[in-house]
Image (tube, rainbow, N blue to C red; front, side, top):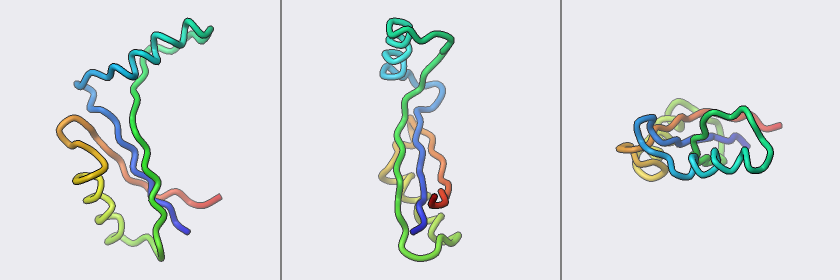
Length: 83
């Protein structure tokens, strides 16, 4: 069954306190070399039937109206092939 993935991330100009908390915790856990962390959301939508341009347009609309807040977040939509 095809899967469409929507990745949602805060816009670059928006503060990300969760990402900053993770960034601060990494060195305390012995991990080094990470200079920034941004935390987002991932939605995996399993689609019945073929993923057409119309289906992708509908998923894009879902992302704009429900899965993300376009004022403070950006999103990408892509098809993930089953393993």
